[in-house]
Amino acid sequence: MAKYLVTGGAGFIGLNLVHQLSASGEKVTIYDSFVTGKKKHLRELPKDVKLIEGDILDAKELRKCTRNVDYMIHLAGLNSVLRSIKDPVESLQVNATGTLNALMAGRDAKIKRFIYVGSAAAYGESPSLPKVETMIETPLSPYAVSTIAAENQCRVFFNTYGLQTVILRAFNAYGPFQDPTGPYAPVVAKFIATLVDGKAPVISGDGKQSRDFVHVADIIEAIKSACIAPKAEGELFNIAGASRITINGLVNMLNGILGKEIQPKYEEARPGDIRHSLADITKAQEMLGYRPRTSIVDGLANAVEWYRKNK
Ligand SMILES: NC(=O)c1ccc[n+]([C@@H]2O[C@H](COP(=O)([O-])OP(=O)(O)OC[C@H]3O[C@@H](n4cnc5c(N)ncnc54)[C@H](O)[C@@H]3O)[C@@H](O)[C@H]2O)c1
Image (tube, rainbow, N blue to C red; front, side):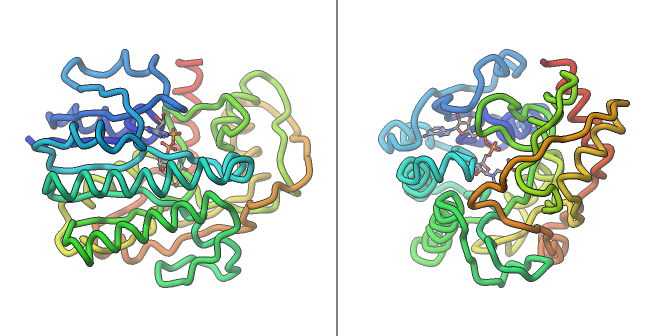
């Protein structure tokens, strides 16, 4: 049995991970400030999952939670391009300084590995597809800048302090526990909620922009592998579905799953949004044994089912 500290464990990816880890008998502590995470979902967690309410920017409090921890999975962050454009300082502080605090706590506690989930937003405006880990980052938003800073800090902590860090650059994740509410809700959760209510989803831009969607179950598998895979330390891996669909295609697919024919509305394209996204996952396949096992149709059906049960 290993001991895991999951920062941001009350969020979308975090809750999926904590459920999985605790079901496999691992000891799990969540560290979360509930800025976007929801307390109501914690009721479903097994009693032995420990919860510490704290801010990632509170380095002293965070340090108290790392005693005897084997693996830190760092998911506490502000995950929205739009939010970062409105408040770039807040995003940089939480995502970059917060990661620095987490790395220092992990280093001083001599943990085995530190996993950081970064974002495909780092690839930004570079037009070539698929995105390969060796490409130079060309960020389009403060959010992207903050995740690149966090990734670079992970590299420095590996090279300078010998802390085993692994960076997973996640593409567009979706699935159970993704919050469809609020101005910064991610596209899949938002569209499911809108279509279930019989309303027209609003697409920013012409809807021909494409995304590489990845079901959260596949991200969880990647995180678990990253903790133990030999020679993964100090490395960065794309984690994605490795296929892409347009946002118009996403609406069609969700309409099909829900048995509806609701036409989307269109608004102006949003600043900071990338046009196309598709990952090369060869490195993760070879070094982590990663395989995206959930097809987009099955994954969306699973997300719809979860939403209907939990709305
Ligand atoms: N969901 C995606 O598609 C995606 C893709 C790439 C990268 N990521 C990254 O993965 C991480 C988790 O994303 P998510 O989708 O689960 O987001 P989320 O918003 O659902 O979860 C983030 C969690 O972090 C917590 N948090 C935020 N600021 C905090 C702070 N200052 N102190 C302590 N806790 C804080 C929130 O309360 C929340 O529970 C983020 O860093 C995000 O940038 C997500």
